Length: 321
Image (cartoon, rainbow, N blue to C red; front, top):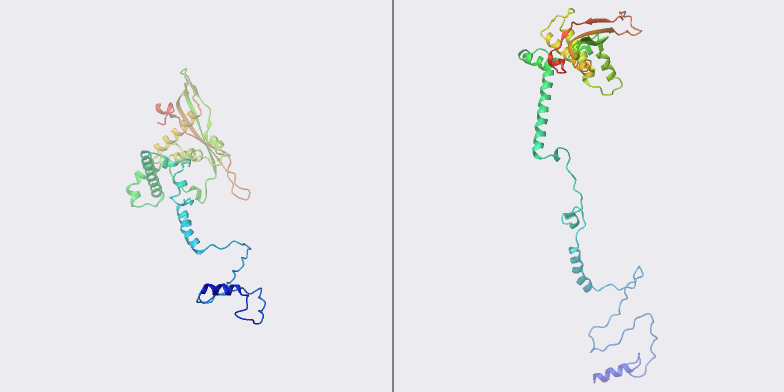
């Protein structure tokens, strides 16, 4: 019975439910067509379908279903989790963990030495640091006013300071040094044939001046060794070359060793020659005062000639004695 009724309804034209009636209104081309349903097909009336908004980019591709997205998400996450990291700071990066071609930076300086040599370098630095501290302390006690330490250990301080490290205040005196001092030496030589000859005067101060001229970093020995040696001798001896201080013999030995070493350096003895005796003289020439000064001094050089000194055997062969 129901099948016949359905067939009857489908065969009738739209707008007619039974007998003749008014003609049906034309169908709206815009309004959606809702198929007629019977009460037996559905309880709730059918709602018209709402069209989906158009894609702004003009893409006609349909959005995937939620079930498909949720089913595909674990696979994407799993792929990302399995993808190796490319961060160079990540320790798990296989490219950084194992790269046999990466060069190894060699160690330099003390770190490149073996532990044994590192210990040796550390000990050497410690010894140098201790020596520098001791020297600074000795110089401080030497220039400091008289105190308990200088009175108790004055001899040890003098032996450390003199003659190489003597300190004075002549540079800052009210009347600083205004003279040119030239130390010269000559020698008595025994030749290889057994004869004796006397050399001419070697101007040692002029040699130091030529070594300093044009040298931006002259050595301390070229600037001060010879000058300080002569100053040390002149302050411990009188005009008659007699000792006036307890360090007079030390000053004489110090000056003699310097001039003998200079003569050996200049090869003054010649092949097979031996230095037997040396004689030192000092020529002092006053510096001309400036034009605006009213000071009047004599510019005549003054020579001070010392007696002949016998050169010990260990010094005559080039030693220091």
